[in-house]
Image (cartoon, rainbow, N blue to C red):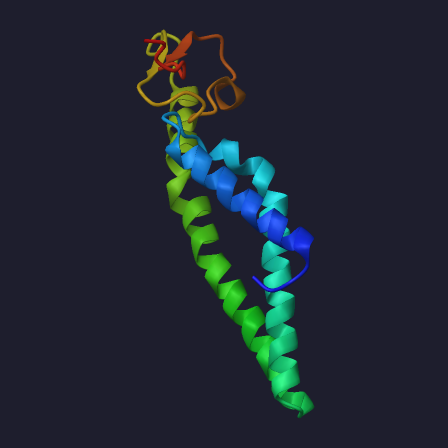
Length: 143
């Protein structure tokens, strides 16, 4: 990476931390949340340098604006597809199950057990009933 020393340090920190978390036995996506601002800075720097490189190569103004417009459309489409998938299909099952359970009567529903990893269903925040809810725990093995 060509650039200032502080950007190289941020890049090495993000790569090293991601590699260290990848080697750990207990992995969760939330461990990478502190790295998101660093990754956003690095991505923004790459986009700016890409734009500067494209604008210095071609002198006509319409080529620069076409390149910029193409990058914006491409990035928008690339981020739109995963966003739609996650919002529409990937995360919808947990909410639909809890909406169905909320509609059942007290005689039909005495307790709820989720055989899923902890924190993967919203439970009481969507259920709004005084019913015992249990789930698998997230405690790491202590052997």
